[in-house]
Image (cartoon, rainbow, N blue to C red):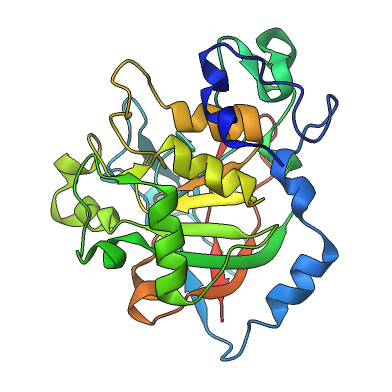
Length: 302
């Protein structure tokens, strides 16, 4: 377990080795045990699935300069040619995509403090121009565990929280009490702000000042031994930061110090509409070698 003083470690205090030891490379995944999977299966009562991802394409709002481009490759088809006497035709495609667009997963190689990543790993050991040599998202195993939705927007009595609204430990505890749930070791916790709705209604507003998790809230969840924090906006944390002189300190606290992973731009509206507070959470990532972020389609089953 960590303690609340860890929220200030990014300001210069010693912050490594990690709570899992100096050689650890998987962070909060250490909390996942077979018992977590078995407990999660017991939450499946109706056999209903929810995709927690948003459709992603060229128009998806993204933190600049991230972008999405897809091209169709159809050799010979434009000229009307086919293959074989059975006249087979077909289409391939290739992508030029930043994986940190749309619903995506942040790995431990994504954010550093100075030039040191999780567990104090120096940048020269972590990456070169071809990709990361440590903490690549291809090393993330299939994740099956209990998921918890905390509807902070509903707690505040609003449909969409205001830009700059900070999610605090008090909000987390009040949401748990309101919804009758608790956070357990190995959980994935989803925080609903309602902000994902602006991606369609006001896309020009989606990237910028947003409601999100504050540092004390992030440390509270790390102390609760969660594996992943998911939020329905692009940054997980409140933007701009609570301290105007800091930039993405929650990323540093979670990824570099505590080894807690992020899911961003998650779709939580259907879960909230149906009153689903806990569920079986399933995530499998593409095995692209050397990536620090990865497009994702997390699934809730209840």
